[in-house]
Length: 343
Image (cartoon, rainbow, N blue to C red; front, side, top):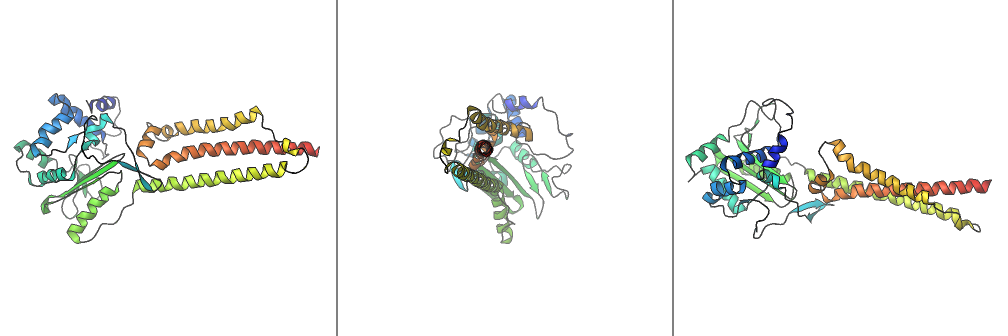
C-alpha cells in the first residue's frame, strides 16, 4: 500500500522538535495519512479516493495514480534544461501517491472547487470535515504577525479576508488551488512542469480579481538554478578550453624546433595512470558530496528533481580535472627535458 512504506520508515525517526513548538511542512505527513486511511478502511488509497470522493462528485477523470492506469490524453511532463523545457518521464514514487500523485483535469477541478465553496449534495459528515479543515492552528503560526496559519492541508492567509490555498509539485508537474469562500472565488492552476510560479500565478489571479493588479512577482527557483548551472557549465568549458589551448601551444613550442625534439615528449604508463586516477578521485568525491552536504540526499534525487543542466556540472568538473592533470604531467615532462638539455 502506498503510504505504508513511508510510515514504517518514519517509525525509527526522532522528532526535530516537540509537537506544537513550531511549524515545519512535510509532504510525508500525507503519506502517513494515506497509510491510516488504508488501515482503517482495508482498501487501497486509490480505491477510497474513488469511492468516497471522485465518483460521488462526478470527477470521472480524477484518479489517485497506481502506475498501471491508462490515462487518455494525459499531458506529458517537462523539466527545465539549459533555459528551455525538456520532455521528462519522471519515475513514479509509488510510496508517495497520497502526497503527490492524484491526476486530474481542469473540468474536474472546477467540480472540486465548487464542492468546497458550495458543498451541495455532500454527506453531512463530509461537509463538517471540510469546514473543520479550514480552521487554522493559531497556536503555531507560520509568521510572526500570526497572519498565515496552517489548517488541515490548507494554508490560511488572513490578510484582507481568508485566502485559502495549497500548492504541490513533483519533478515534472505542479499545481495550485486557492479559495476565497467569502467572495465565492475559486482558482486552480495546473502545469506540466515543476515550477513554484504556479503558486504565484494563483496569487496574481486573486489580486487581479480583487484589486485589478497583479501581486509582486516572485522568481522561479528552478529557473534560477538552471541559469546558475548554465553559467557554471560555460565557465568550466572556458576554463578547460584555455588549459587545452595553452597546453597545445606549450607542446608545439617545445617540440617543433630543432632536430629530434619532436620525439622528446613521451608519456609513460605512470603519467596515464595519474591522469586517470585524479579525475577518478574527483568523481568519487562528487558522488558522496550530496550525502555529506545533506544527509539522505543522493544524485538520483538531484537528477530527478533538478533541471537537466545539473548533469553537466559533475561531468564538466571530472573532465576539467582530467585536462588539468594531463596538462600538469606534460608540463612536468617538458620542464624535465629542458633541464636535461641545459645540462
